[in-house]
Image (cartoon, rainbow, N blue to C red; front, side):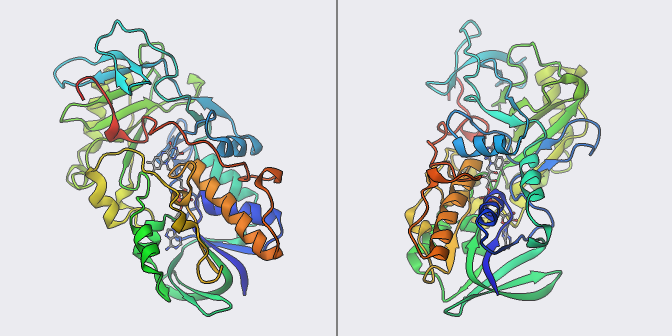
Length: 423
Ligand SMILES: Cc1cc2nc3c(=O)[nH]c(=O)nc-3n(C[C@H](O)[C@H](O)[C@H](O)COP(=O)(O)OP(=O)(O)OC[C@H]3O[C@@H](n4cnc5c(N)ncnc54)[C@H](O)[C@@H]3O)c2cc1C
């Protein structure tokens, strides 16, 4: 029988596995998809010429997110600042050329005219990227864990509490598989767990409601990225940052997604403006529409290749029906960290994880690490039958003290909150 079963191989599950391993706690991780990373996904370098492209998260914010910043440094991953001269190319009329306007970080709006001076760094709040794409983080973590403990293609369907142990019922290659563990961590979005798993005994009603009410950040978003012949936007006002706000917008927000060294390629990425319900009807035409919108923003000499697209609303191990229904709501960043979600269940045999259970950085990569740090403290305290070890005294990854909240809904994480004159 296993000691700890971690369900979910996203950043939360992987970081938890890493810190349990450092403490010699026995664990095995079960992931539904054939790949690790969850919402972290980059198209690999070598998948077409040019740099890797992030189709999930792109940014972290060193000024306010200590855990992810430290983890990236500990793993020795190369980073680069997001290109940001404080201006945005605003395309608010499909019949007019875009205008480069200064972004005012205090109001979250663009200046009314092009004469207002810009503040470099204001638009992306000091965001950084990983040079190898965000998947480099997942690859680096996975490479430090024993491969036979990372079990992919295991779809958890049900959990049964037997008193001393929990039975996990998986589907693996279409066949049922049962595993027993003393303790189970669900390192996946609480709303997804509530919608897709059966619990016996059923979870108490207030908890089940709290899980269902917790939106999975970006679950219904769609992202597109294109490799380009040259980063012709560099050196021009806006340095690749653009907002498209007219009703026929295809990408709501665009930014430079290429490597710092232009000899290694160039890329742009953006968030699809169409809602989750609209997107299926546009699927065939979307690559062409994206191409023409980018040409309107930056010119025909862009040399953009076929866009890489990912519609997260189609991903059953991320997005639920409720996320799709809420898609049209304001994209403001929700408040996360409902204490109900952090309580031990089944006498400490069952724990909820995932970024959306974290108060600090909830919804972000930072929150996934904060959740992993909390769970590690809980699980090792139980294993030692003693008081939790202070996080600050901890030397390994994902153990940094609770971070400050990231800047309110940084642009790019919430395309529908884009603010512009007249909004
Ligand atoms: C398009 C997009 C852009 C984003 N941009 C940013 C950004 O720039 N910066 C930032 O900080 N954050 C961003 N985020 C959010 C960030 O990706 C998440 O906060 C983070 O990846 C969450 O990690 P997690 O491990 O908590 O959850 P997840 O990554 O969702 O991992 C959960 C894992 O559980 C698995 N799973 C689900 N159901 C089952 C089951 N039944 N059985 C077994 N396994 C299961 C899933 O396959 C998945 O691997 C973005 C997200 C998206 C989608």
